[in-house]
Image (cartoon, rainbow, N blue to C red; front, side):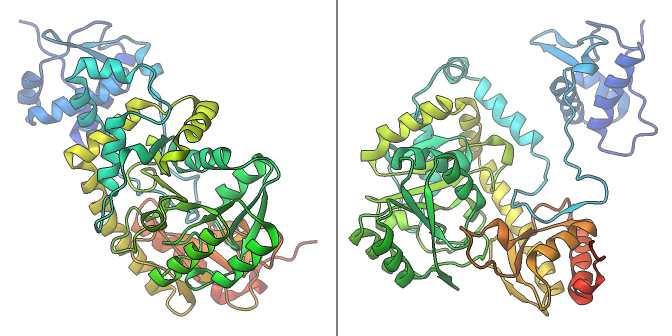
Length: 464
């Protein structure tokens, strides 16, 4: 009686299922597993190793994900061959050695492999649906997916309708689509004096003239908006009423009403950015809830669920749907329906809600750490936000601080990255708490920033 293949795990210190997958890869490379060799059944290997069948199932799934094995329904799991290990796509989430990233607003680095696999298995149980998802789709997206997004957005009595939704490849693509549909080269568009850099990048590509609107602690100043509208006859206002990027300002209901009144008088269309609010709770309703006839709401699952899904959306007036659809076709033809289906399956099975809940808890803990460590400095933050806004003490300049921080191994974004036009740049930096790999890395990065804040620019080497 021949013995079954057993992985060597005595030196392995990580999760057992990953150790089994590593052993499969190693034994293929070393010739102990041959092409098309059948691996032990889940039960047989689990009994031999003293682990659960679930552990073996995860191990084989991981090996299949790497291209090491293939499964035949009713027959078992088989080795792909010695060349399979070379086909594994190896990605890393590690930052460059010695560098701590506090400059990106992104979801936490958590293991989503099981959630992905579970959703894909659920979708695969309906072959007709899979075949449909692998075919061309309407430019604005499948209606069932658009309905699911509406359900996800619904809050406080507001729920958009499916015919208002256009699905995009993330929030940046939604912004580009909106600008393509609403403007022509040479048009004037408005933005907060400090705004999301992706907006100014898209505006430059489309040859638009961007004018800034002054801000205070709530965001856009109505009197400044009125003045700029009278001077320039703009077509579009881009703004972030909640958790403004980078200042974290959130407009009160009264401020939102005042801004919308000005937009109505000047026939200004609003592009509203809600990409970064996915983890926040208790925020005012978006402008789109009060002025749906002139507001295009941008959202995305990239900041809240997983950056790589690249699924976003626009909630827009129905009269603009054909123009937005044409912009989608011109920019990418259509969004991958398979990725949209993955997100909708996460919504359906509760995975999306669980991902949000776990991230809310961790982000809140990280924000408490940051606020405590930087408590002696002037800060702006909001519950559910991914970043805080630090006003630099004298005599620091924002560009000097960013350079000095990177020299110490910490990346932050200075105000100049967000500044519209050539206006005065405040001496402030954005510090993101979600990009660090863990709390320990966050603390290390914050402590390095604290050293700089206390030392001052005098600690920087002179440049000749």
